[in-house]
Amino acid sequence: MDIATLHHLDELLEDGESLTVARISAYLATHRLATANWFGPTGRSSSSSWIQRDGTGWRVWETDERAGIMDHCILRTESETEAVDSFLRRARRHLAANATAVRRIS
Image (tube, rainbow, N blue to C red; front, side, top):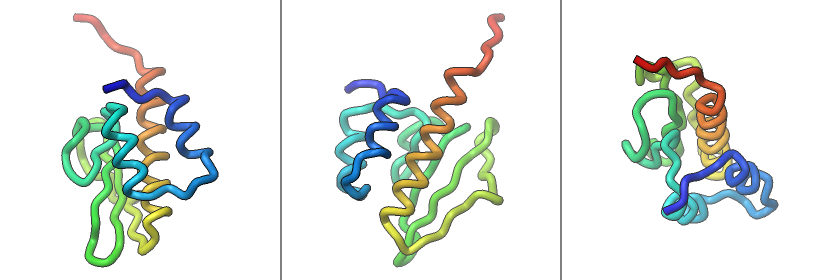
């Protein structure tokens, strides 16, 4: 399993083919993405994106550095494409933030 990079995600998001759950499932099966929780806790709990079916629609949200749900940014939509796009863009943003984070060494 490869580790997803910003370049991988940019290519996926820019591809003209519509984003679907099947396509993203296949991508995540081959690329580990710690900032993405795909229909459950599959990545880390903090500073990450989440997606879930919500009745007949979709719910997408993200968590802060303490793993708290950021209520102001919950997306509820009927569109699979919109939900998957939002989920990946949020995961990409958190991945980019990791690249610029300063780590303290104890």
